[in-house]
Image 1 (cartoon, rainbow, N blue to C red):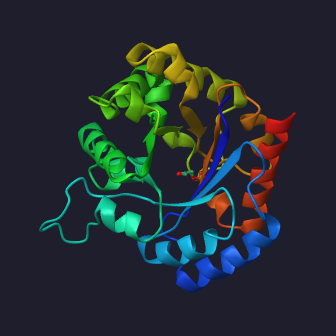
Image 2 (spheres, protein in one colour):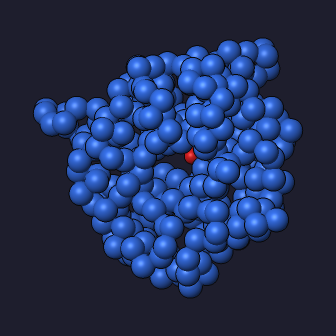
Length: 258
Ligand code: 13P
């Protein structure tokens, strides 16, 4: 049975002092991850060390970066390697977030290279896919998401695919307050799982976690996480406050044990 992953993407928020204060508060609200739930927080690079130190006291609490470079070293000003991320104590990395695709020229090809590099370095990649508003309006969302999944995972073995997390984030729902309905989320998550079964096999597809992201918060998380193929959330705004994020973590725990 799949377990939940409740992940927070802090984007470009929270310096080191704020990160420490956050964990101080959060670890009071969640002293260990509920059964069947893993927790992930992804701060900015400069806060990774402090976050990993603070997270080490909580069972099931993981830290991740928001990006990496696919090369091991070199003249890539401003970039960071998988090994450097690992060194901070982080064990996950977000790859191909729509903001990186939109503003930093991230493509399915770089997503694929980065995913392979993360796995090689022992980091769990959280590979983001999701359609733009006009693509949904034109009813092209299934094709867009299929292509992102297939190209993102190209050349990745079954064993390595099992180490991967997929995050479906419809771009029109990110930071807009507009969430996919639970039915819309379930429909496309089931579609992604079917694609994974085609790429690998049913058993592998059944094990890979597929997270939903896009305006998930303490009000709508319960219904979204109750969908059969929604295995967690990749949460932006609502992960910046320990109380709303911990509420979502506890919802997942309740759903798992019910
Ligand atoms: P919001 O939860 O703020 O919509 O952000 C979602 C997201 O982009 C997480 O990666």
